[in-house]
Amino acid sequence: MKINKYYTYFIVFNLLLAIPPAIIQTYFAPLNLIIPYFWQLFGLFAVLTLIIHLLNHTGFIKGSKNSVKTFLGGTFIRFIVFMIVILAYTTKIQIDAPKFIGNFFYLYLFNTVFEIYCLLINLRNQN
Image (tube, rainbow, N blue to C red; front, side):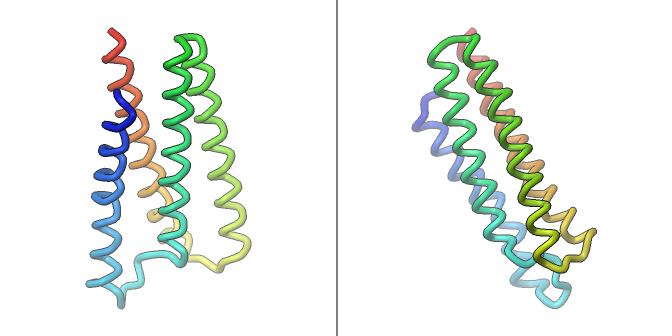
């Protein structure tokens, strides 16, 4: 996939991903379903997804052996960064656990699915 096409997909994906929390925060504010600093976490997830895709894209350009290394390295770095974020967030902010798990995995799951989708598009284009 061309990098410009990825940027388009990335922007559309993040806009679509931001709609449900924005609606919940606006129309269901008394229920308090969105955790504090949700939008900062949203930005962190978006930036890390972008960085990891750019690393994977660089690996694909360099060759198949490098693509595997960059994908696994990016996945490992992403996992470690998010575990550090969870540790820092839960120690600094008093949270409601089910709310945090729901918000965090909403972001983590959809960003991971998007990353895998883009990876599959890249792999299909090579064949």
